[in-house]
Image (tube, rainbow, N blue to C red; front, side, top):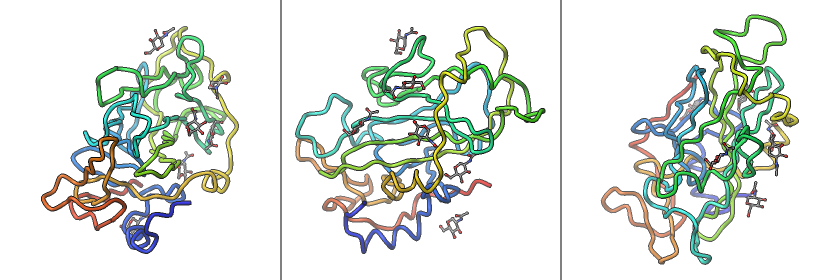
Length: 253
Ligand SMILES: *[C@@H]1O[C@H](CO)[C@@H](O)[C@H](O)[C@H]1NC(C)=O
Ligand SMILES: *[C@@H]1O[C@H](CO)[C@@H](O)[C@H](O)[C@H]1NC(C)=O
Ligand SMILES: *[C@@H]1O[C@H](CO)[C@@H](O)[C@H](O)[C@H]1NC(C)=O
Ligand SMILES: *[C@@H]1O[C@H](CO)[C@@H](O)[C@H](O)[C@H]1NC(C)=O
Ligand SMILES: *[C@@H]1O[C@H](CO)[C@@H](O)[C@H](O)[C@H]1NC(C)=O
Ligand SMILES: *[C@@H]1O[C@H](CO)[C@@H](O)[C@H](O)[C@H]1NC(C)=O
């Protein structure tokens, strides 16, 4: 499905094995996690144990200043159509909606995050943990819904005139303390069916992480500007890939 310069892409694919089948390799630089899309993940880091009142997912939706904020000009060759986020686990069988673009009652699942915090390039997606995740530490009883999860960040976007849909799964563990609170939404109201990994793979484009320092992917915006890597000499025509020297490829067990 991803068809920009397949030959050049193939060599990059060897470097970036962060497909959802083996999403254990992450491209991390300066504390940011680069994704197969226009969004850059500021937090949480892969592998973090989480808990507390809510989960906060911080996303830079400006590709670190390369892409203007929405609403985008109609003719923009690059833009984000929408972002959806789910929290799922094959271990517990749960698949909660964090945001699908349409807010549910009391923001139990969130509306379009692209338009929250107007003027800010970083969107802090705050989602109240639902009731079945209350507890402390590792899951202690059979049937517990706590434990290992993925934050599944799905981007529908246009890059240099071509539309894409990618899925980026970030493993976390829901093992820190989450206290009981009558405001917590019901898990069942937020739950969706789980699909098999093959079905999910087939539904998404297979793209590498992009826009990390040293990556030469360019981004054309409405003004006709071509914004490439910030490195000197990094101005190239759209769709050309180069090896990422500066980005660290981190592995999470
Ligand atoms: C991570 O990527 C490196 C190459 O960058 C590869 O050698 C290694 O096998 C990958 N590990 C996993 C678990 O996918
Ligand atoms: C996201 O955008 C794509 C492309 O415009 C569209 O097909 C899809 O329905 C949108 N999804 C949501 C949740 O808005
Ligand atoms: C998280 O995602 C990875 C890759 O998509 C998958 O292999 C793993 O089973 C998922 N973990 C859980 C807890 O579902
Ligand atoms: C839901 O979130 C939106 C965006 O942050 C906010 O404007 C709205 O007031 C919230 N609604 C409720 C019922 O909390
Ligand atoms: C969004 O998610 C909520 C909670 O899972 C669900 O009730 C609602 O039907 C979903 N809306 C769409 C448009 O998918
Ligand atoms: C979780 O549910 C959403 C909404 O139905 C779906 O798009 C997504 O593929 C599901 N995730 C998994 C891992 O099945």
